[in-house]
Amino acid sequence: MKKIALFVFALVLSAGCNTGCKIGDKSQVPELDFETANRQAKAEFAEAKFGIFIHWGIYSMLGQGEWALESQKLNAYEYKNLAAGFYPSKFNATEWVTAFKNAGAKYLCITTRHHDGFSMFKTAASDFNIVDSTPFKRDIIKELADECRKQGIKIHFYYSILDWTREDYWPLGKTGHNGRLFVDAPEEPSEITPEFWQQNALWQHYIGFMKEQLTELLTNYGEVGAIWFDGLWDCEYQPYGQAAETWDLDGIYALIHQLQPGCLVGNNHHLPTFPGEDIQIFEQDLPGENTTGFAPNQTISDSLPLETCRTMNNSWGYRIKDTAYKSSEELIEYMRKVNGMGANLLLNIGPRPDGTLPDEALERLAAIGEANKGID
Image (cartoon, rainbow, N blue to C red):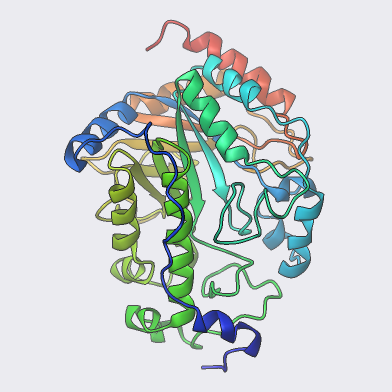
C-alpha cells in the first residue's frame, strides 16, 4: 500500500457516517408501513409505462456529453472550476415539466449528482453544488420536484455512487484516474476485500457522504418516487456479493426505505438484482437482450417492475455535435416494444447549458404525446 497523502489526512480524521442533515417538510410524504407503501409504489410504477430521463450538469457547458471529464482526460481540479461559469438563465421548470407531461410521461428522473461529483441541489455535504459554487444560486432539483408535484407527475432522483472529483472516493475501477492526488489501492484487485473497505476510514467517509446526501434528498424535497443509482459497474472485478458489502448496499437501501417507505430503489449495475432493490433497470436495451454487451450476467427478474433507459440521440448529456436523433416513429415503436415486454421506457434528453431543451427533443416529445393520446 502506498502512503496516504498528507493533504487528505484531515479528511480521514473526520471520517464516519454523518447523516445529521436537517430534516425538511415531509408533510407531503404519505405515512404508510413499508410493506404497504412499497407494494403500492411498485404497482404504480409498473403502470407508468413512460418516463423522462434528464442528464444535466456543468458538463453541458463543454458540449461533450456527461463523461467529458473522463473522455477528454481533463484534470479533475481544473474541471471543478467550470462551476463558476454555470448560469442556465433560460431554465424554466414549468416549461420542462409541461412538455414532459404533454408527451404522456408519468415521471421524471433527473441527475442530482453525476460521476463528476457536482450536485445539482443545495447540499450541506459538499460546496461543489449548484447553489454554493455557481452564480446561478438556484436549486433546480427543488424547482423541478415542486413543479412535478404541481402537475401531477412523479419525481425520481438519479444518484451516482461513482465520483471522479472527491478525494475520499478511491478510483479502483476503470474510470476516474484524472489527476487527483488520491490514496492508491492494493496493486492486485484480488487483495481488495469487503473487510479492507470496512476498515478503511477514508472509504467509510465517502459512504457517509453519500448517506448524508441521500438523507437530504429524501427529507427536503417532498415525496420521491425512486432513487436511481449508477456507477457500481465501474468496479467490475468485484464478485457479486463483495460489491454489495463494499458499497454497503444493505445500509443504503435500508436508509432510503426508512426515510420514505414508498420510495423505490433501482440500480443500473448490469447485474442480477440485489436484495432491497425494487426496480430492475436495463440500459439501452430491451429487457434481457444485452445487445450492448453491458450485462452478460443480467437475468430478468420475475418479481420486480422493469425499466429500459434509452437516449434520443447517441448521448446522455448534451453533446453539441450529436445530431443523430432517432426519428419520432422509431422512438414510438421502441416504446411500444418496451411496454409490450411489461417494462417502462425512460427516455433521455440532455439539456443545453443555458437550461433549454434541444429543439429536436421537443419535436419528438410532441410526436410521442400525439401517439400517447387516449392510451392509459
